[in-house]
Image (cartoon, rainbow, N blue to C red; front, side, top):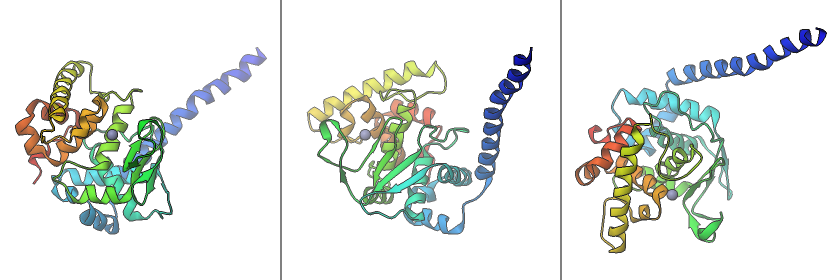
Length: 266
Ligand SMILES: [Zn+2]
C-alpha cells in the first residue's frame, strides 16, 4: 500500500514532465514562427539568397518564422579556422528552411548541429575519404558544409547546383532510417507513384550519364537513388521550368512532396 502511494505520484510525474516540456517547446516554436526576423537578417537574405526575393509574398513570413526556429534550435560550429557569423547562420538556415515551407511541424528533428568549413575539406570515410568535399549529411549526426560552396550555390539560382538543398534533402531522406531516395511521404498511398516515377527517372539519368549526354539533372544523380533525390531537389528549386518541361512527372512528385510550385515564383 505504502509502495503504491509513493510510486503513483512518481509515475504521474514521469509521464507529465515530457508532455509539459513538449507543450512548452511547441508554444515557444509558435511564438518564433509568428515573429518576423530582424532587419539585419533580412538584409543578409536579400543579399545572399536571391531565391528568397522570388518567393511568393505569403511564403516569406513563413520562411522567416522557420529561420527563427532553426537558429534557436540548431548549433553551428566553425571548422578549419572559420568563425561563425550571423551571415553564415542565416544564409544556411534560409536555404535549409525553404525545404520545410508548408510543412507545418517539421524542423529537421534529428539534426542538432551544422559544421561549416571555409572551403572544400578533406575527411569522412568510404570511397571518397580523401577527396575534397563541399558538404555531407551524416545519418543521426551533423550536416557539414563548405561556406564558399554555400555562397556560390545560393547566388546562382539557375544552375541546378545548391549544396544546402542537396545536403538537407539527404537529411529528409535519412529521417526514416535509410538513405534510399525516398523521404517520409505524406501518406502510404504516395509511395507507389514516388517509387515508379523516381526509379524510372533515375534509370534514364544513368543511361544518359553513360553516354555523357547533357541533362538538366546533374549526372552525379546517377550515383545512387539517394543522390538522385538530392540532385532532383536542386533542379526542382533552381530549374523548375526545364524540369516541368522535360520531366513533368518527376516535377509533380517533388511538387507534392515539398508542397511547393517553384515554377510560379517570379
Ligand atoms: Zn549527396
